Image 1 (cartoon, rainbow, N blue to C red):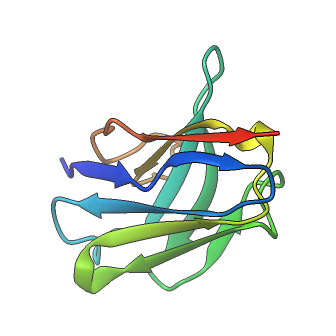
Image 2: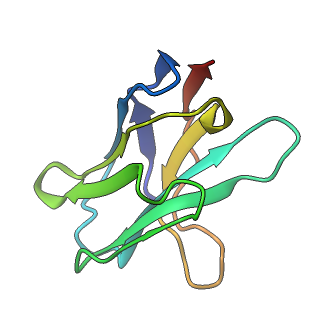
Amino acid sequence: QVQLVESGGGLVQAGGSLRLSCAASESIFSFNAMGWYRQVPGKQRELVASITSGGSRNYADSVRGRFTISRDNAKNTVYLQMNSLKPEDTAVYYCNVPRLTGTVAGKWGQGTQVTVSS
């Protein structure tokens, strides 16, 4: 089971930007898709962005136009560029390998905390 390590979170003011990174323990080349999720206390983890092996991207309505997901297969790394951040983006962000069934193929990491102040 692939292991994932997220980094790049922090405290930022509303309107600011952050770039998250996710390093995988094995090659991500063979994965059909990679995704970024986020979770706030008391709520379910939600998928906010995904990218297929062919480069097709999908975003949750709440982040479309502000977040950009990318992947570097040579570095086994997935990125999430977050611009125009809002307080409601505050959450712990995780990456994983989404399956069509709605489950994930990787082991959940510790995540990286993103806090957006108003």
